[in-house]
Picture (cartoon, helix red, strand yellow):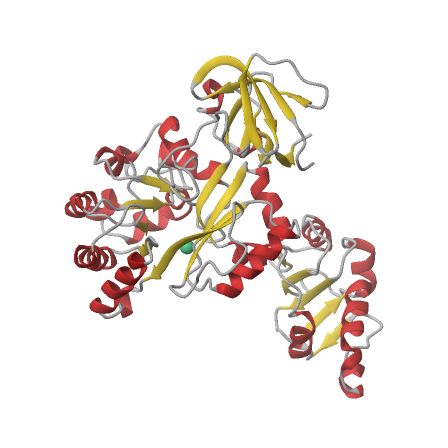
Length: 468
Ligand SMILES: [Zn+2]
């Protein structure tokens, strides 16, 4: 599908509500917008009045952890019967190893190779008993393990033979034989495309040149379809493969309340990053971390694009400081939904208005953008958009009602440029064709912010998700 010319007809644009436009895409770029007739080589997609927006950029993710989380499936309670176990195993997509955890006999009294062959998906499966001592494999899994064990000593190989697929005390051996299996980044990437995401900022603090190389390979092999901005260690440098698909992000500093670094150390880290014109992102979830960080920025100075990650708790006095220092905030409204009930229970009432602020920051002209923090937060950005507008917790309580923002403002949280998260993009000629087509106009969507409305996602004009 690369370099295919597309004509998206009858689409609504945020800049022209209620009107229909045709958008022509070729060589990865939006070329024309207007009333267009398809040329011979163009594939036409009728948007039927649906909204076309720039592909969403998730400004705070941990992609590899997310991919790893997709490779495990819970095989014990709440799974309680062979039927529900079969359902759980078959609900996972992919062709790589499927790893089950937490299995117990209460689910199935004699789970074995034959049952997995007959009831599980067509891929290698290994399921761990919750005691940790027993693994149960299907035929494909067993064959793969035995193939990998060809170079091992005879007595070790013998431990991997089993007619019923039940292997005891081989945890270490299995770990060794499956370690090379990388997590299913392809599935992670597909999931993100389904949400309309065309770019991510990977904020994992340990990201280094090896991770950079790995991501570059994942992109060139087609497993990873999104553009990536990679933040990480100070040592992470744009070693190779820098380009439109993989760009260098912030120096990421991860603070822990209990063991804050030496103050001058943080000032030096900020300073060193600025010297090479690299922006910096500091993880701040507590008031102490934020106070400490703001003081360090006051010493070292700031450059445009420096940012606070999470800003989970911002007392009023610190809003002013954020503003003075011209720092941006990348926050996670999804945590209001996901963790709000526990915040309401465990955090003093007086601090509730300070949690995961949005509106008050925007009103103070502090640049705000969103990231899901997947897999620690729900990977679906639409869930967080919805939470930003209603501030509802899972149980239906409201956390910080005055911090609600309108759907129009919320959407901008994911429309920022990957490298400039606080600068919103729009669909216009000359821009890369990173697009998300929805199946309804904004008038409908703004009251129904759900990813199920995503109909088509293109990155550089290449279709990376199509609902049909
Ligand atoms: Zn994070």
